[in-house]
Length: 446
Ligand code: ADP
Ligand code: MG
Ligand code: MG
Ligand code: MG
Ligand code: MG
Image (cartoon, rainbow, N blue to C red; front, side, top):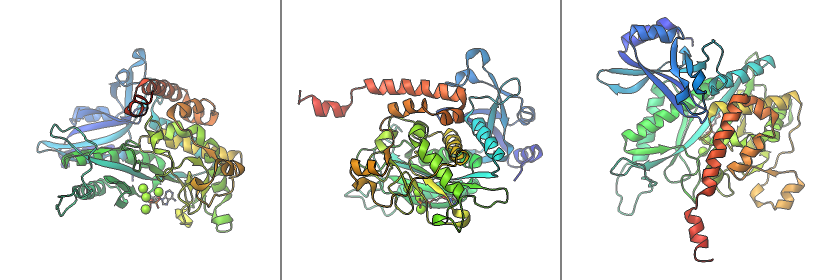
């Protein structure tokens, strides 16, 4: 599908679009936007890549003295939001960020992913595909409209309500996503109370990452309309499952065949699949700061809640870091289970692609699959078969980034430096905080 400037001008008139949101993503993964009235004059500017914004107001983006940045809209991302008012509709375009001299801005995560894709194309592949499985919680709002940690779908003692508000909310989210052109494959209640998952069909990684950003916006907006708060934080509640975003990945070759599939290979996987897997496993410890970027992410990566803790892979077994789901042919894929939805998708997938390509370039061999439950093995048993740990804290994860030239190159100097600086501040602030757990465990004991 290719959308032209003429298509956009026509839609603006026909659908009574009065505002345009020009969207981009910052280093932390937050979707930002500049809202512009959809007048002829502004449209001319937008469609001719002349829309300027002040980058210095966005943390870690640019220095004050180079603050003028340009937004180049990707016309294929055109969407008309289902909300707005009687006066007109709001439409959106996802943009790439450019410097005043017309070069791509190195601190733009979407542009950075495109850089990784250019590398991939040079190695002969046609596309890198992503099918994400984002999970989230729906919590009640209090009277003031602030989020609580109370779920509304566990059917309280006196609760005779015949319908489940959360399930209805999830259905409406799916309807809106479908209207926006998403191919939703499944939507279901998750293991934990208040937790949900919506899966949409895999597509090329750039579109899939754009979809994730729009998806989060839709989920949060529709939840609010239903008096609920949607959160993608990794582990909002102690003692129950956290939210992950499993990433299903595959490479297609020039003919559109799945390069991970080989009917004659072991488990019907190609050499390319094993090498890509080898790259993912080799760099897993070092890239975790990008796939699990918050202090709270590491409260999810603990035993007992279906989240991975160790670096290993398997076929059907759901305990390891990477699973190879049973489907073959076009559906052949690697499922990375550590990623959580606080990850900046553009950064995470650029890093995963480069780590996989590194495995292919170096013809790495994947270790043997681990088909028994890793959580039942002792530390010695794990060591004997070469199963290592994922980082246990953001602090360790960020330190590990430094050690990995492939991960650093995948981020580029600008993003790497700003990411590390921001995360160091985040860790330092957390490390100094005295939590209720410490009071409960130490105040009376000492
Ligand atoms: P699970 O069994 O882990 O819950 P789901 O059925 O929820 O898996 O999600 C599987 C995801 O994998 C979907 O998003 C689907 O579109 C995606 N997928 C299928 N084939 C491929 C492929 N070749 N490459 C990448 N993703 C794929
Ligand atoms: Mg799933
Ligand atoms: Mg499923
Ligand atoms: Mg799930
Ligand atoms: Mg899954």
